[in-house]
Image (cartoon, rainbow, N blue to C red):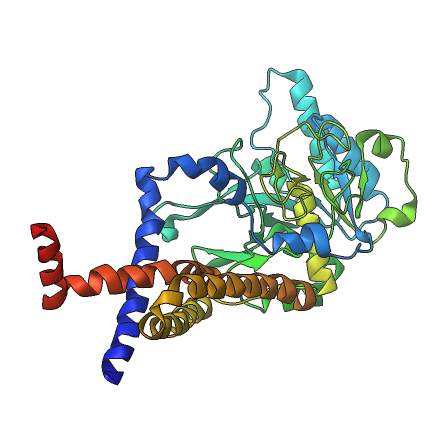
Length: 420
């Protein structure tokens, strides 16, 4: 009996994970469409988002990173802005935008704009221009890079990729950004993320230390936004200059000198909440469940990464392997406990299992939030939480249906029911 009990706990655990695999794929058949409104509200949310949007203390503004809004300006205006800012000796200037093709020779105004942009680019001592990783669907060896036109790119001191990780396929889709790639190999050549490259001009040791972590992906430790009129809890944590500020030189020299300056799109004007171009949802969003509107431009996300690197304030996280092993162990321990209840005090089974499940999920959620807030460490408890949620009812199905179906006594009792 003792050996049979432990065998049942192993088979019962396997049955639970089999159900998890089934329900994980069953959505492809749209069986649960009725729950879509609820699912849509929660599918872009993680419990750790609560830490960023609700629990974090108000951080100090970072004056080492200055953002410059390029709005919808033409190349000539951007070139003039580059010359103005470069005259104040920043540590580097990065441009989070692309200029793919030169203007047609017949477009006199356009050609003049190209020339003025070139003059602006040439005036920058440490210029970082954007590149884009182009991932091949099936063959990583065919991954490639996209750059601005070589006539502009020739002035770059370095290129770095601006890709941010989201699940979105289209601009209009939900773009939740929690992680990014610090580096990526293209045909044996290591390419570095835009924010890491820019941080290296301010503190090369900090950038090198971050890359030495050798993580394929890194979580972004968000600290704040630019002027956002309440879109996030921590607005105005990065200083930004709008177009008139630059042309009127409405800033002091010490604001730019020795700083990391990034030219990027921040809306048609600073504080523009309507534009969706290059805009993302982040964990700082005030509405962490059922988000209604994206809260942060891509350039500001890069600024958060730069700040995280310079502060050496990283988020560590449990590997998927350890998380999966923890989930299996937690599921098995629940099966052991619930099996004992099922066999010894069956009348109490439903009530006691539901109580234990409620308590366990509550404790796990608390641990997720607490470890993120206290230690900047993200636990991977997804499998464990799902296993706990399914354990009680799934085990009852295992003992009441699956196990009986494979025993003579169980099949005979079912046949007797048919005859009745």
